[in-house]
Length: 202
Image (cartoon, rainbow, N blue to C red):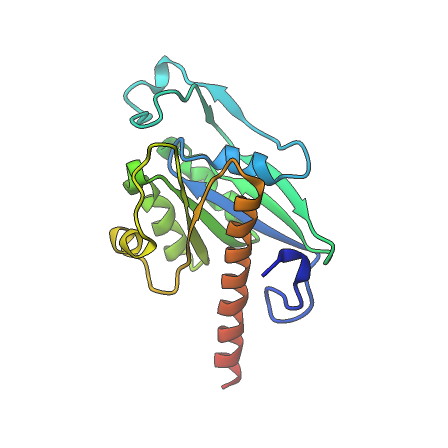
């Protein structure tokens, strides 16, 4: 399915003018990179250099080369000929900034949870948040160079995911790969809303 060929919508009607999507996951998983890879505008970033205050607070195991951190959000936009415009909001990954998630989640139709197989437990907080709030999400496994590779079914078991939650392997640096992640999320949201509408009518 190509986002350029939507003939449905998130609510089963016409294609909406805009849709807000959250990009979440643990510290250093690639959220800023993903937004930057797909955004048609220069992405808004709120990155600051890691300082001495982060020592013992931010877990840099597996991402020792990381020198900056998002302190508020990332923002990007991608639009399609179908008149659908997706606004992407990257959430901060560190626990001390989680209080911002409620504000960023207002109006969002769904979320992408980025996962790193080297530190898979880091995405549990995002999964728990979206499950508690009833927001549909997909898991996008960012395939870092040298990171162990696992089958989606094994990842589903490790994360205790429901069988319907999509799992997509991706490279957050590659635009086409990020597009596939967004397509997966929108398809999932559309299917879920269609099921809910049918249940309501029944």
